[in-house]
Length: 327
Image (cartoon, rainbow, N blue to C red; front, side, top):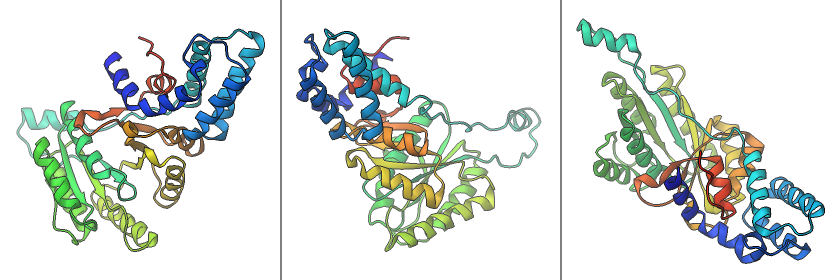
């Protein structure tokens, strides 16, 4: 946990420095006064935590200051982290599925009988171009493989130039199976072929990288709906997960993206990328408050291992520059 926290802390360095730069009282031993409270409030707004979350954090600290005028900055930071953790309670996403039915495995192992292909757990990664969908697909595939699962990638972003080649390059680097075609090919056809291949080969997970922008928003939504329909020819429940991948540096704009995609496609979760280079790491709290979309992973760097499972406690304490509490 400590190592994971260090990665969180490094990833949120700009968010933390934004808060620290506004008021040394938040991290030091100086008593919190009205000026410090105003600066904390400004810093939270600048980091895109939103009106509700910022208001709750400030209200808690102000109440504590009224009870104890000598309240130290470190204590204020602890209170802020506790409120943020409370706001995000229940937001940690957990992947279910990914294992072949035990009865099927037993039949294969002991009788040699032909067993119908297992249906993989399908995760569709959705979002606008530039959000990090393609690299997230590869990193997620690597993480699942490290955990002992079998994984296949589907290169269904056939609209963006070089997206297919980018995912193929990642697949080669990380030794992941991939089903791909050429740029401009029918993305739904690629999804259909990938689902069929994943079933026949008994793969645990199929990760579908989708297009981020077509000529109009209507075209994009139609393309996503078509991918869903062809996946459901193999499994009526597919995709089992539909995760929006958002660029954490966009701040409040990522909230609007979540609204649009959730209304049109029906999202089941969130991945927030590029949090290692932004001072606007608070928008995920606003998305959770409004849409209640579980947050599965956050991106804290360029390497495969920098896609980290979202941990509320580590996130909340890193934002306020505090050491993580050990379990």
